[in-house]
Length: 275
Image (tube, rainbow, N blue to C red):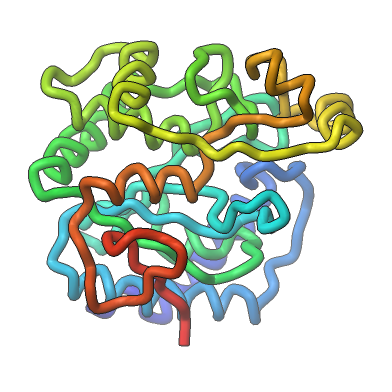
């Protein structure tokens, strides 16, 4: 599928220049110059990933990327997104922090845009829900009203997964997944979080030093700890939804992919690298 021809590359590169000052995930809004080499790498990885997704025959998958280096906290993938097969290629549906502020917005992008957000690595993880759940998720994502039903614009990168005050990007993915996976399309975030808990969802537990925690709260608008349980907060620990925790949860009932590299994840997760 020739979905990254010269004209498309030019158009996407121009849109990336504009997006750099409008919706950088967790970073401040500022004028930036697009690095041609990094952009080319993103296009190449998008082509590789697009070919993998095309060959899978699936309608919808969940992707996770490495936007930040969180290995020292035991986390590999920081950010998850839905990828749906559409007429023009694969559309990425995800929630992004706006310019390092305390707000987030929902975005629909292409694969190249998803991979060109100044990532620390072009490694991508893919997990595939069961076919019936793919159909339910596509139904939900097809409606803007449905997309926003589980969205909370008050953003914290470390939002507690079982509270309503804030939401991080992975929280929107999980709560939307819960709505689609439930028998009756759960109508509220509270019910979606309850379903996740009842199904054994386990968020990531990250150990932070007290100074790190307090410093982040003082100097970053997109980080808040006041929704975290007090016993964890004062022990220098936080509980948050990460790309890793999304992969682990969805993989429990995902379609197994025996012919790929799984890394530390279950057999339903494939790791895709640009060769």
